[in-house]
Image: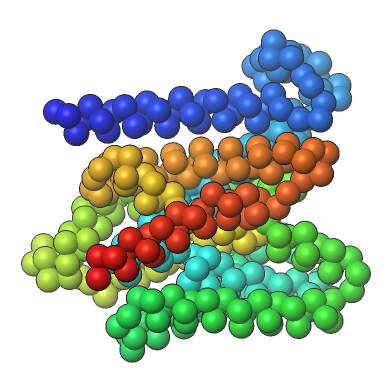
Length: 337
């Protein structure tokens, strides 16, 4: 009964925090708009065509929704990777998966755009997905040969460095406009969000998150060991492929639409498990997605307001909050061993 009450309280807190994040993000900015005016613009669509109407409907709402959807995607991607490697330090940024998506997308943007006028958003997501899968395959090759998670972590960081080096080489051959676009994108930001971005993010992330939730029972069995999962009739090879594809698709979507964002995939799943005090997928998966949404929305709020009118990269803010958690995780695991 106590555990159930705790879980309900955590969910209520997350919902309240998400509502607060939505209100603060819509109401905060260089141009002040009263809450009553915001309510009328959003729900009654008053003042269509006015500056305040355009600020809310074309800038703040798309950015808010993009941050929430992609934040949940990053958290869920990290959770799947931590399940796959059975380690809380695993994540798309640390293992070089985000860097692989970044590299492949940068190569495509620099060399392919010389022959075609523009690259649609869905093509960016697909390209980033291919890059993340390639990086993931490299990690898996070494994972079968390396038994130490610390060594695998170092390999992931080295893969990240290699991908970053290839990206820098691409920038060398890019023109001025491509360099500006790549540099801004590589820093990670939700500032370029539009309703097209929201639609693409929702179309990719929400079905993927639903499939992940439907896989809750196999994930729970896999957490108890491969032997137990096999005894439950789960095909381990197929299940691993599903986890890889789902996690790569989620992280690729984030990288393509907002750039590489660090530490959300590591910190959020662990924070959620500490709050819930349970690792049951049926309970933790929705909570992890909600926590990722809240975490990203508040980080984006800090990024765009703390030094207003200048704006920080979202990765800078997430690193400030996420990196200490990763350090603490590694130190605590070292003490256990």
